[in-house]
Image (cartoon, rainbow, N blue to C red; front, side, top):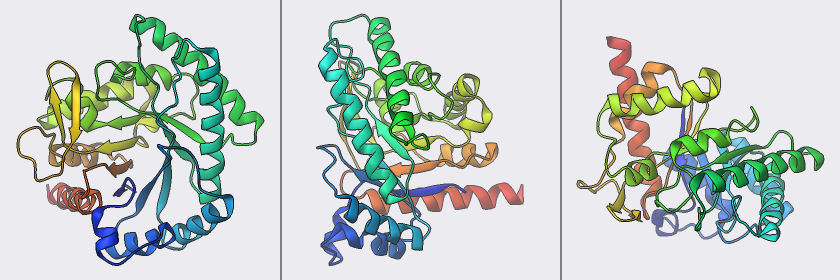
Length: 289
């Protein structure tokens, strides 16, 4: 089944009277959502005990949990110590998401720095191979690393680079951030055909079975011609896009069952509900056709 949910706590979490992360499963159930991405961008700080308790709340409500690994991971760094540190952050992320009952960890590959993109990619591929070996050795072979499509032009992680990273091991799945992809290509995601071309590329690279299970981020993002992504917006934006409805129709047409995480600025839960409604509408239309 396709699942929708927010990245972290939306503004409405506190507005509705919730104060602790342990209350997130109850909040998501009230919102009618079935996924959540726990944010560890500033480091993996949750204890195993707290992670297990949170995970039990998700399990009872059939909510799929993923985890965003620390932002300062750099799989492509020229500094060997930074790459070794990145492996440690991945193992910490794996420990936490496993305690929560999840499997997917979203990873930023890093920047290209002053290297040719091909050289940065080779470094990242090597680090991902080492990450897979480290996960296996630590007993986390069930964990699914999900390299993310990035929005800034100087970051490693365009669509082809992310798909190459996923070629390291069959357990890996791409995190296709459609807002980032739209930002780094200056607004190319407009129609169902535009989305179809992206999904075709994914299927050609990793196969249909894996493509149907992709991890997704979706939000509207302001971008510039010089650097790509500038800032995350909400679904109220009518200028930058992208729009989710054409993608919902294409997901339904292909029988995909992705996890779709909304990263809107403050309204991520409400906008996840809007995406869920759009997918249900596409499903009903498809059944009648």
